[in-house]
Length: 203
Image 1 (cartoon, rainbow, N blue to C red):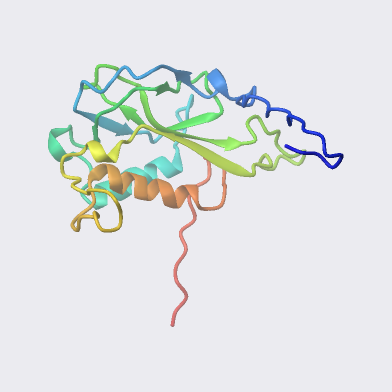
Image 2: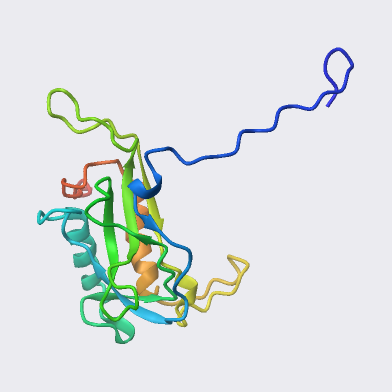
């Protein structure tokens, strides 16, 4: 690159990206792909807060919604579980990972039971609650998903979109991700708070 003096110089290389120090194993225990050989497992919807016996309201809402649209117990998995194809088992969230909230956990028919299929955490991680006892000043939410929707044989979409988008009902995994996308794009509220239910105003 030529500078204003007419001499050539090499601009400094960007610093190598490093995840924030409060992420890493603070969020979950990570492993390389150990799955893939199992074509189908059942995933349990988490309805309690991580490390607690208290209810996880959004998990309760997810389970209720998936049950209402017949997305649980499909494809031969146990009743009340979500069918998950080609799991990779990259993350496991335990009670020690206090900043993370599991949403879906691998069930007993999995070779890695209790592996986390989907979890979220609010950012900045470790934000301190307000002095008056209010909620921490979170500004965003991040998620990790191990739901690979293309692995479901009922998903026959062939790229590129939109020409390859097949018509028909969504697979159970796609229905779960639909719920997750709406949650991810909504206002950040603590996991202890039930999701707001708004009613359209009368016409």
